Every structure is written in C-alpha cells, then in structure tokens.
Length: 216
Image (cartoon, rainbow, N blue to C red; front, side, top):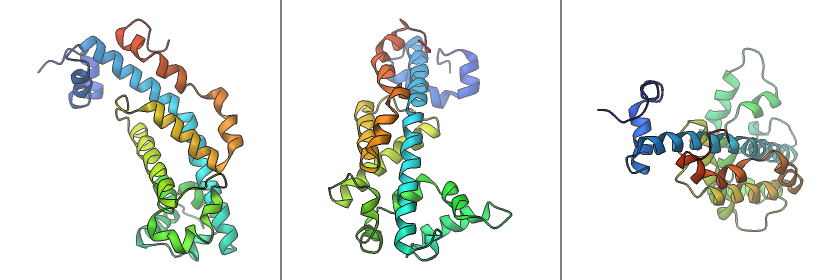
C-alpha cells in the first residue's frame, strides 16, 4: 500500500514507523515528512540537556552512596534487589579486565540510577543517604521518583528513535531543568547557551507547513 512517502523513506524508515506521522498529519504525506524531520530535530536538540542530566544524576548518586558506604564500589555493600545486582554483574561482564568503580558507573544504565529512588529503597538508601544527592529538593521521594521516571521514558524514546512530537515537550523541558536544578543549579544555568530546544519548539508549525527547511 502506497503511503505517499518517498520510496527511500519507506525503505530506510519502514512504513509501520512512518504511518503514525501520516495519521497525525491528516493523511498529507508532505506534512508527514516535515513532521518526521521536525521530530528528528527536536530529539537531537534534547540530547545535550539530557546528556548533562544523566551525568549529573549518576555522579551525584554515586558520590553520595560512596560516602555513605565508605567505599567507591558501594554496590558491593548496598542492599540492592535482584535486578539491581543483575545490572551490576552485567556491567562488570563487559570488561575483560578487572573493572574499576568508574568503569562500572559509566556502564550502568539510566534505568539503574533512577531505580534507586524507588519505594523499595526508601529506608535503606533514600532516608539515610540518597536524599542528599538532590540538595535542592524538599519534596517527598515519590514525587521525585515520578519526575525521574518521566525523564527516563523521554530519554529512551529519543535514543530509540521513537516519536516524541505528540508529548508536551515544553513541560518535559521544564521538568528536565527542574530536576537538574535539584542536583546542581549551576549546571542548570550553565547548559542554557547550548540548549536549542526552545527555538526548535517555536518553529514546529513553520517546519511542518514547509515554510522552513528542516535545518532552518
């Protein structure tokens, strides 16, 4: 079945991936192509802020737990659940040599770091130590957990080349800065000069109409 997309797009991206863009564009192939391009643009724009957020999160959590357990490889003392232990073992298995703590920290996924804020770790990790990894935060752990989970979903959709154009991206952007400011207000201020998300959000309609090229 013809979708109206250029043949190379059907071949490279696949019709199942492109069809939702066509539906969102009321069946107009030209608008759907432009929407696809804009989705790629805004996804790329989010990468810089998400990069800073992910590094700030894992380093703050790592440093705090290292201090609490008095060793850099704190995961060998922390009461991690079965899934957490599995992820650590998986990270260790990627090295032919003995992995350093820095090696393991770099290999552990964002899902691992955000999972440490879950309810099951409230007493063993959050109360005695982890709340200090977010010095600017004063709310309940559950609210922070929800914010981190939402940002992880956004990050994963972007990294897996999925659509994000239908999300409330202005709210996502504000949430990212809010959580980053809990960890480091200086970082939240410092990354603004390289953040292109606001300008890309402003030109969505122009790009989708074809008034601006995808790179504008």
